[in-house]
Length: 287
Image 1 (cartoon, rainbow, N blue to C red):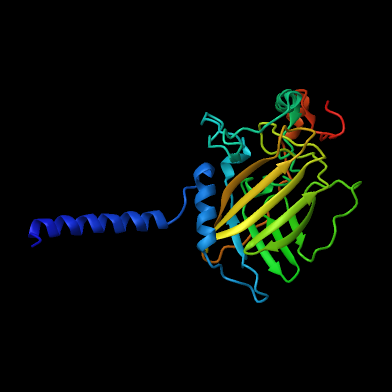
Image 2 (image 1 turned 60 degrees about the horizontal axis):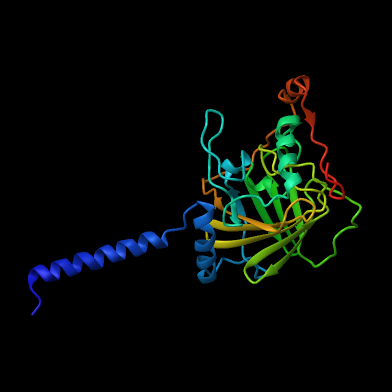
C-alpha cells in the first residue's frame, strides 16, 4: 500500500513535470540558434488562423530582432552597441561564409563607406525586418504587403505566380514574388542592386544575390522568419538566417510616420571625415 509520504512525493513529481511541460510549451527562446529548431517543430503542430480565402492570417503589427541591425553575427555589448547573438543558423558557427576577398571588402565597407541606413536609404531584404521599426502586414487575395514605419518603405509582394521582372532592373528592395507552401509564405527575391547592407558592420551581398524568405506562424503572436541567401560572387556557399517576428498587441496601436529624411544630420559630418556613400557591389567583378 502506498504510504502518505510516497503519495506526496509522487504528487510533487507529477506537478513539477506538468509545470515543466507548461513552461516548455509557452514559447521558444528568442536566441536564433535555439529558436529555429523549436519554431519549426511548433509550426508543424500549429493550426494558424486564416483569411477569407483560406490562407494563414499574418495580419497585424510586428517587430523583429532589432539588435541585429548592428551586426548579424554574434557581437558583445559595448558602450555604443547593445550586443546580441548571431542571426545565422547555417553554417552552425554563425558566421557569414565569405570568400577570401569578401572578408577584406567587409572591412573596407565599415571603414570607408557610410552605412546606407544613416542617410535613410531603404534597408533592403532582409534588414528591413530587423531594423528598429514597427511593421504592419496586410493581406488581400493575390498580395501580401509589408509597411515599415521607418522611412516610408514597404514591400508589395504578389502571390499570383507572375514572373520576375527583367534582369537588367535593380531595386533597393529587390523584385519579390510570393507563393504559399502549405502554411508558409515563401518569397523569392531577385534584382537586388546591392546598395544596402545586412547591418552596421558592413556585411554585404552583390547584385547577384538571390534570397528566399519563409514566413510561418508558430503561434498567434510569433512568426518564424527564415532567409537563405545565395550569392556565388561573394560567399563560398548559401547560408541561412532565422529569427522571430513578435506581434505588437498594444491596444489601439497604429503605424506612425517616421520622417527619417527630414532633418537628417548624420551624413554630412561623415562625408567631411572622408566617408563615402556606399555604391553597391557589381557581382561580376570583385573590387
